[in-house]
Image (cartoon, rainbow, N blue to C red; front, side, top):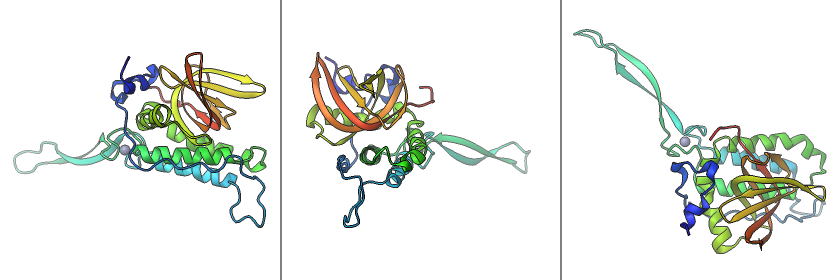
Length: 260
Ligand SMILES: [Zn+2]
């Protein structure tokens, strides 16, 4: 058997050598999801109304601004400038101003902040996303904003995201087991995309033994054969015909246009 880390990061499409080491979790435990079955209709006497579409938009923007490295805007390379001797004869040296790029020191070239912010902000977004009513007309008006923010994070690269979250996902699924109704993020290869009883479900291969089944994603950008960042609320974990499944509801699936 391979070591757990290698097996877990064994996504062929993403397994660039540099990304095989699994990052450890930097800090706090992931944020807890709001209750997914929370009452949707705000009532005057309720001190805390259910999650609003606006709160989801804000959570999505916070995910993008907090997960993407601000030292390099997600590129992994930061601009530098300096002066270079351009030759100028014996008495005076002409110097030319040069601009170049170096590996970003803030993220060490990954393009993302640490595992803690990526996981916490991403799972917070999943929790908020799952809590809204998709029949709220405001959702239709704002879905593109939320999609754009998630796409911004995915655009940094799925290998980079895998480096940041694989360790947490592995620990959650194999050691401590996620709690039901807890939000989860993952990166994997979309192995199947089908409709069951009118609801879309995507199977995502996370490792050699684990699949995530994304049920009724609220935002879906991806199809079979593509790698994706995905998330949802944990509703079920089971062994089925030798496969281990975690069923995630009401989240998202997002691929990236970036070639990896
Ligand atoms: Zn950076």
